[in-house]
Image 1: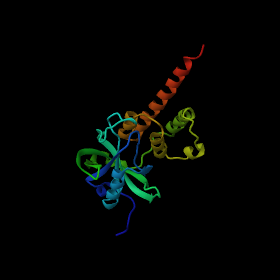
Image 2: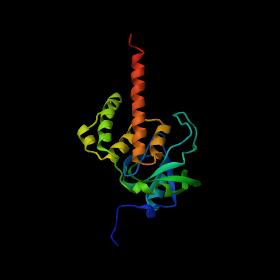
Image 3: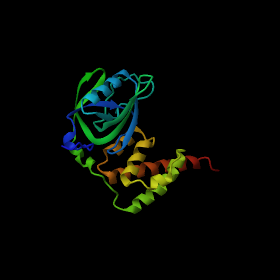
Image 4: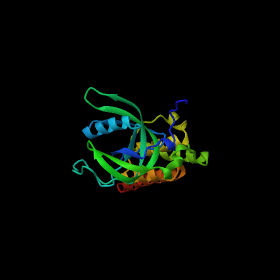
Length: 224
């Protein structure tokens, strides 16, 4: 049998470890670098390596801040599984890892906590289309989006390689911006749960337009 790096629906496990992170989004076919240093997540990583190399990225639905003492907050029911494609151990006892977005999932039931990290039985069937690369219906959509994106990234003071962005596929562009920009938890979750790329594109465009319009309104208050 020829070895394949490509995963499909039948390769996905019925149970995965969960990594809850506020405002962190992973989408199919995107890469997410992470630093693991908490004891429970070091154990989670070892468990993932021994059990298919999948980690379920999911956002807490409870409001979390830096002073929060909530150890195991309530979670959104939909997350995205990442496949560990690379890792290194640092001199200060951390793991630096890269997850490759594989498929979204829905949490059915959390199972017993192991070494402090959370696990859940999950189902994948609603997201079988995550294995198919998508495009926008029209090239004009991307061109219009790029015109909107420039002032938005300028507002965030983000330095970008526009030549690289212009050469991105529709999916890479939309998913990269969705993951990288500092949207709120509920906005990130809406981007994650979008039915398809077109839906995610519309949500992303609305969020950017709203941000730019709010900025204009804020500035106008100081114009005499």
